[in-house]
Image (cartoon, rainbow, N blue to C red; front, side, top):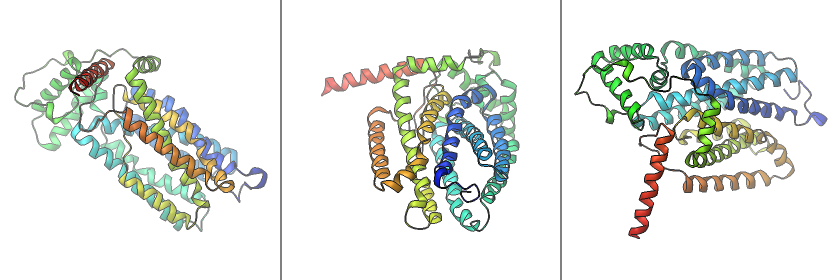
Length: 385
């Protein structure tokens, strides 16, 4: 790419700028994706964004001009972030709390395995033009056909948007596949939804279900009160009115930004490090298999993810240029990345609550009640000491 478009001398830095523009697209998507996910659903957003990724990769593979390629990278950043948003929401909402960590880890491991394989794939394609890797990514994205036919919409989203018929069809198919009585499962589901309407702290969980009572429940009595559309501005206002949400969102935003910027910076600097760039990329990616990035799925989780991810991608816009800094001052990127990681880790340890295997709050009121309970417990502990 550098040779084809003469990105040297006075044009030095333009190659890195494509990654900055890509990150800018992710920033824009961080503002738009939460609205799309809440408005149109998790599955449609995921499938549509995957289709667009295939198209954009094909266009990028045959780009003849630098600025055309850079423009495509901007839109690819928008679409890719929307895909990630919808996927994270599905993971949080498709599984009970006992399975959430396992499925999140599985998702991260699959992503890391594919990413690490790109080092080997790039090595095998090194004698071909740079277009080949984009064509390969377009082909790989063809698995969207599996999503279209087999992936189900989030039941939580369907019930929250009063799409009872669609939810009933999904549960009926699941009951048939698992050879269990549909009426019993449907009755339990309606009771769970009614519990969340009265006490939204009840998370989808095997522990909060009881199959003893199968009394019929009127569907209209379990429809949530949030049938009216709530604007994104209202969601943001709710976030900044709650001190708890402000604290969690700020700390998570810093942590995500540091992690993503550190990883992106080191990836961008691989070509100036000692050794094979292909092996270095493989080793960088394989580390992700033993790591897990999580965001507390608190109330309005997609909006929280949107704020944190927007901030993260804004910081990542400068990551590609750390390679140029490393060429001038080899020690500087390590100091910046290492210090940032230490500070963000301390913030996580001090300010964030534990969410593992715990029921997650669903409304602002639940957060306020939990905050008051924590304060009372702190006062009791101080009295004991």
